Amino acid sequence: MFAQAGELLGEIKMFKTLIVEDNTTFRESLKATLGTEFPLMIIEEAANGKVALEKVITFQPDLIFMDIKLPGESGLDLTRRIKADDASIVIIILTSYDLPEYREAGQQYGADHFVSKGSSTREEILELVRSVSSNGGLDFPDPEGNGDSSMT
Image (cartoon, rainbow, N blue to C red; front, side, top):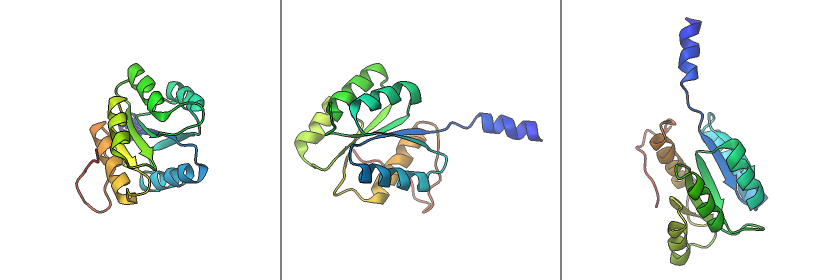
């Protein structure tokens, strides 16, 4: 019986998320929200581009929340570099500036989704993560019983 349980656990894919955000308060708040809603999610943080690139190599995330404005390097440039090396990583652009130019730039640089910090609700972000994770082969249960949806 224990061997069967171990075999089942061995098949569980741990979903890894990297939050690249220089605003400590926002980064920690997003991490706490994700950690509460998705207890099986492994979450790492980076406050700048240099650390983000190191963590992409060592941590190998499935999902990255990427702020556009970072110290040292633009989140858009980082997105392009990361996608050039591994197109399977899902990148969600985070920004305080919900402008069409930023959305277009995000798409041009290879981002998969765009989230406005000021106008996206907690539930919209969680629904997006559910959608992304289920497309990656890991289904997080929806406590409300709703279907998956994504924001683009």
